[in-house]
Image 1 (cartoon, rainbow, N blue to C red):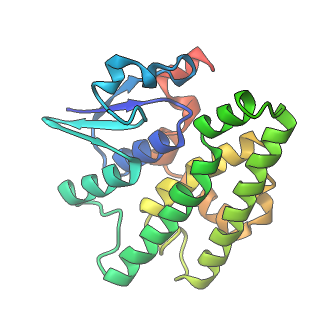
Image 2 (cartoon, rainbow, N blue to C red):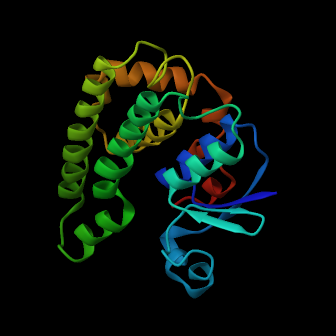
Length: 215
């Protein structure tokens, strides 16, 4: 049985939930309540020394960092694939995935926003402006990348993959901070195609058991 240490609003956890669902895998959620700082406590540090979510437990194996987990799932459970079979295609999907996971998300995650609020004393309006600035910059680049790629319903062709697992959570977060996502029509066409699939809908934050706690 696969176990995923997760938090309903965590974008990185959301990515892995989608990947697990796309592969049709049975998994059990283990909530790490980020608002209370459980990720920094000794109990969870014993599971993941980085103190981040998600963590995937697969038998004796403990894995962290969302993209590494998704690639692990693709290597150990190859069907259906989340990366193309050809090297250029795999490189493109990894590049799109990292544009979200390495360029946009680190500037917008909970640790950064908390630091802006507590250490730098920025008010909520300034924090929201910070969020939207980096989100807009990244999504504009993503839009350009989609323009230059192969046509299809999803980020790379007509089958959802790792890049789609990354894009959808970012759009959920962008909307939370009132980012004008309609500026990116190709991005939003892909988002809508993804959200027509059960694998994405059942992974979204509101569908998670811990969403009932709020926060």
